[in-house]
Amino acid sequence: MAVVAVQQFVCFSESNWRNITRPCIPSHSTILLRSSKKNHFSLISCSSSQTPEADTQTAESCVNLGLELFSKGRVKDALTQFESALSLGPNPVEAQAAFYNKACCHAYRGEGKKAADCLRTALREYNLKFGTILNDPDLASFRALPEFKELQEEARLGGEDIGYSFRRDLKLISEVQAPFRGVRRFFYVALSAAAGISLFFTVPRLIRAIIGGDGAPDLLATSGNAAINIGGIVVLVALFFWDNKKEEEQLAQISRDETLSRLPLRLSTNRVVELVQLRNIVRPVILAGKKETVSLAMQRAERFRTELLRRGVLLVPVIWGEGRETKIEKKGFGLQPKAAEALPSIGEDFEKRAQSVTAKSKLKSEIRFKAEVLSPAEWERWIRDQQKSEGVSLGEDVYIILRLDGRVRRSGKGMPDWQQIVQELPPMEAFLSKLER
Image 1 (cartoon, rainbow, N blue to C red):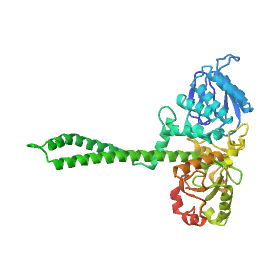
Image 2 (cartoon, rainbow, N blue to C red):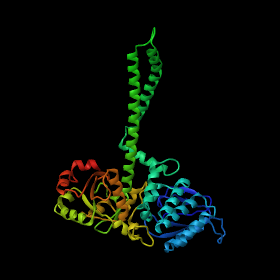
Image 3 (cartoon, rainbow, N blue to C red):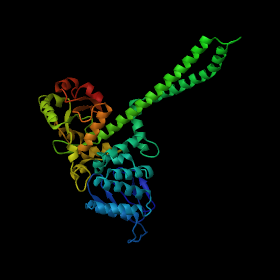
Image 4 (cartoon, rainbow, N blue to C red):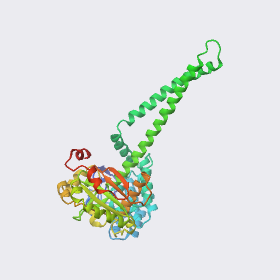
């Protein structure tokens, strides 16, 4: 749970502590921060010549006390403290911290709607970054709920009310993947305007041609010009809206890819990683379905183990229904504490963080053909969203093959034909594999 409570005279820096801005405080203050790499809380003190009254209850002290209570598993008491902080006239940073941690408490208690309302307020009124919600393993159980999907959809649609920065980031990625969309739209608008101006002058001529008389324009030629202009406007407007629809579909897919990249796995060496850390190293093949079906597919894959490993295949089994039985630890939200410790935050300095956790060469040596999913409810939700986008009936057995860069390569119903996959995927050292990176 990424939080901070501050007093007055706050100056900001872009340090990463769950992607929430860290303050620098010139006045004497004690701040309770959660480490971005370890699952514990620590006290950081800043001092100056000013000395506030120790016994005065403030929004800051309530947030800090709430964090301390939460770390001891006293979630109900922590929730009371966060609510008290909001009633004490908090500044924007304190309010953001109180709403965010209040949401974490509600998520822990399984109160998805209340958690979503708190996060929505923090997003709209206190500039909470949506990436914080995506990154925090403490909110893993919330991300498996329908309320999170609704909140994410609101953020994807963007606007000034909620998650505008999230949509902006998605659009930047979309522009990289489809660089000429803006040029096309410009021509659609420009040509439509030209056709509209031409039609504006053609309509009076058409009326004169219909009326007839001396000097009247030729009716056939004039009506033909009007028809061309009208047809051009209709086609160009239709293309404009079609392009908009394609962009929204692309943004939705990028949003799903972003969610997928943050899903956690446990490797055979017991190391916990996010899927994004395996980019350019493996091609994950997700097998989702009933336990018997997935187990049979895994057994058949063993016959092609050597060739599949040459192609960087990592099997990721997801059994329908396992997510509903996820046990929530007392101090975490879906992931065990050790798992949460191993997950780096995804931010601007992710590459630096990933390298500090483990060298890519060492990580590569720990990958062994199969991995275990953590937070299975999150995995199920993502797979069902993918099924819905592709028109597949929810709950069917499916497989999804990812590219080396983490995007979906292709998917299909049932379980894969391993011999066909061996023929389809190039070896890791091949030139075509380099193009995927």
